[in-house]
Image 1 (spheres, one colour):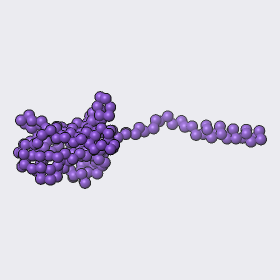
Image 2 (cartoon, rainbow, N blue to C red):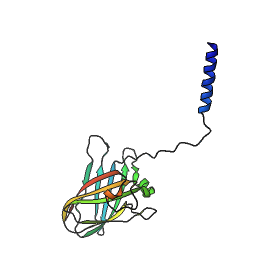
Image 3 (cartoon, rainbow, N blue to C red):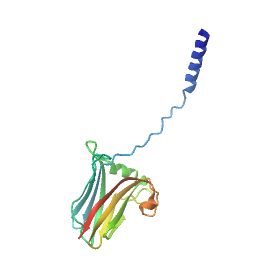
Length: 184
């Protein structure tokens, strides 16, 4: 019996020592997805009029729908300069996720699509290090009066370059918000 315990102990010790490694390389860190609770799109016309489109979803995937607001109607035949803020408001102070999106611009792209009776044109004003569109800054030009929706979608790791459409971009959607828009 003592012989069996001695052999078992030696085997256990040998296996324990063998499983240790001289590799001191730390494991690769996993870049966790950021929590996005709020998307704010600010559209500023040459006249100085600023319109805010806001989506706020403080409970994330909880039971409450996001609160979506548009501060005013857009004017027909007007060019707006747009800027986007993406926030995590589950922490205090709110975490500015748009700063990380800007730093990782080669891994992100915003897309703007319209629905209903809208005649809008958008153009990117900011680009990643490879001169591919990012979309934290953009222009939006209204043509005729109408009503419909404008969807703002942020894609993570889209194909770059891509054909400028969501279906051709690939990647995963980080956030997508449908805003009701009236142009008068």
